[in-house]
Amino acid sequence: GKWFSSKVDCVSKALTRHNKGAFNEDKEFLSQIGELNLKKNTIEWNKMIVKRCHTHPLKDEDVFLSNWLSIHLINAEMFEEASKFLKSQEMYIHQFKLNGIENGTFAMVTFIKLFKNASVDHSAISIADNRGTASPMISVISSIRNFLCA
Image 1 (cartoon, one colour):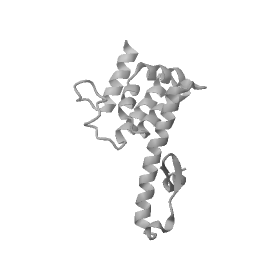
Image 2 (cartoon, helix red, strand yellow):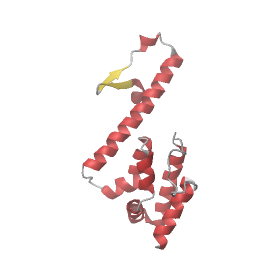
Image 3 (cartoon, one colour):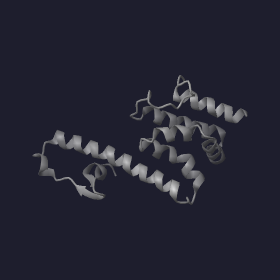
Image 4 (tube, helix red, strand yellow):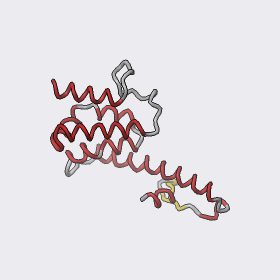
């Protein structure tokens, strides 16, 4: 996975393998290119998974929506969609139905940690209330409490 993803690039929708001798085999430069390709491919391939999820019926929707969609949204750098989904009743219903309240809440907190650690300018992303003052973790925990106590 990671090795392959760092060695190929998508040019006009075709995979192209990098030629080792193309850059005089400067190991540092090749390493940087590999890291950039890995990041770009990770984003693009996760976007493809999210798009497929939205356009094709899923065999086991509860499992995908509760355990995987958040990860793919975050890895695709679709932060606005990820924040909306992580605070949605749809997410809570899928999580609690599949994993129970305790494990479902733990899974959502884990997704928020992943979201928080993703390379994103948090000032541009508003996962918090309209005031924009709460942290992503507090905002989601508050949303879970409101959902459970409603």
